[in-house]
Structure formats: C-alpha cells, structure tokens
Image (cartoon, rainbow, N blue to C red; front, side, top):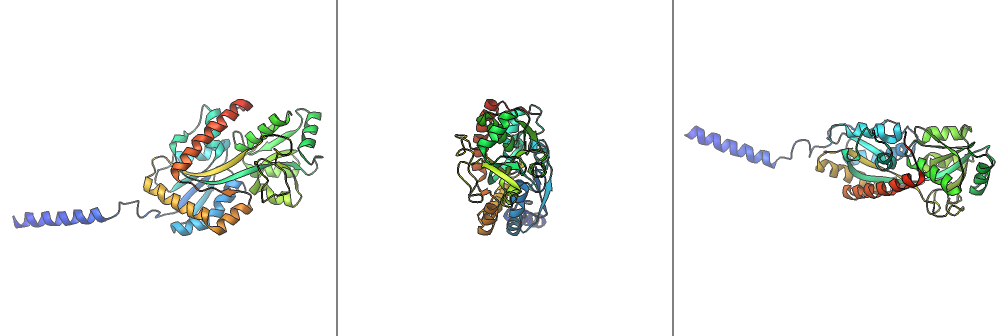
Length: 325
C-alpha cells in the first residue's frame, strides 16, 4: 500500500509540473531558421521590403530569416509552396495582392486555395509608376496616348506578371487612355525593369522601390504614378489621375502569410515581431525611402482586408476583360 501511495503521489507531482510547463513547440518558437518565400525575383519590391525588415525581425525573434525567391505564375508558384508546407511557423510567404485577390478570379486550375494560407499581417502598400524607355519620344500621358493612337497595337507595356496588380494597372491605363497596346508579362518587376531600361519594351508599369533610383538618375522617364496623390519619394512626377485619367488609382501590396493550420500562438508571435519591425522608425524610413508605405495589421484585420481587396479586384478583372493564362 505504501509503494502504491508513493507512486500515486509521484505521478501527481509529475503531472502538476508538466501542467505548469509551456506546451512543446509553442513557447520555444522559433528554435530554428525561418524560411520566407518571396514570390518574385531578387530586386523587386517584395524582395526589397522583406530584406529591409529582416534585421529588425531577426533581432526580435532571436532567429534569422532565410529569404528564398520562387517566382512565376503571378505568385502562384511561391504561394503553393507555402500552402503545402508544414504549418509550424518555419515556412512563411510574402504574398502579393495578385496571388490572393486576382488569380482566384482568373484561374480555374489554381495550385492553391487562398484558404490554405493563414494571414499574419499586411507588410507594405506600394504604388506603381508608368515609365518610358529613354529613347521613346514622350514626356507625359497626353504624348503617350497620342503616340499609341498613331501606332495602334504596335507599342507595348511590360509588367510584373499575369494577374499581378501591375498587370491590372497597365490594363487600366489602356482602358482609361483609350489606346490599344500590347501588355507583356515578365517574371517580376526586376526583369521588366531590365527590358524597359534596355529599350526592348517602350513602356512598363513598375513598382517604386525597383524604379525610383533609375528615374532620379534620368535613365527612365516617369509618365505618371498610379496613386491618388503624388508620392513624397517622387514629388515631381504627376499622378495618372491629374494627368487626365480621372479616377485612376491602383496600389499594390504585400502581406505575410503562413500555411493554414499554423498554431494561433505562433501566428501571434510572428505578427508581434513583424508589426514591431514595421513600426521601427529606422525601418519605416528605409521602406518609405524605397517608395513603399509600411502597413502593419493584426491577423484579423489582414483577413478582412484580403476579402475586401478580392471583391474589388474581381470587379476590375470583369470590367477590364482581363484573362488568365
């Protein structure tokens, strides 16, 4: 009886101690490197923004982030890899607006469902700029429209990929300007920038982080920005709306997601780390210098934001007659 009683007491003590210990895998997170999949090539805005955030996030989590670029299919390839990863917080994705809110309206053979991803936070909002190659004889929207009307169907606009916000911005430009121009998709902003810089395409819709310095150096001609107001980073460049395309506004964004099923505690830990980084004055200054605007949110706010953006872009896809691959 004594031995039975002693074993019962020991079992009770062990149970009490275990109950007081944090659940394995949650409190210790992160115990290893965290992989962040970026859905565009190096040099694009998503890549630039996440690398600007990495030092502050790594300091907060006391763990490094490994950036992996997986470009293609308007973000679908990278997002599919995130959706299929183990939901333990060690594989994250930088999701572009197109992959979460445009592609589902275009593709019947989507390699992932947006519901397969857990929203963590919006990272940054990024306006676009319509640029011309240096040897194209235009300086503004009126001259661009006139040239396009003189050469219907013979001029082209490069953009960051089918179903991206840059694609929709280019389509919206041709619609509002009343011109016929070929829309040429690239595997991200960086290759589109290279080709318009070399004159292989006369025009391109680019994001500000990838194009601002080239514009300031006079290597690309900025025709107009897609935001509703002029940008502090390019104060001398007019908006497309003020240049005669009334009501023109199109802004891209990138957000952080994890595989669906990632424990709520880990999502909250990641949200806390990234939101703190997005509010760090030095990080804010760096992101704004790039032409982007930090936009931290709670997971719940980001989920609602995605839903509203999906509705908005879905309408535009239908109205503009945008087709998928």
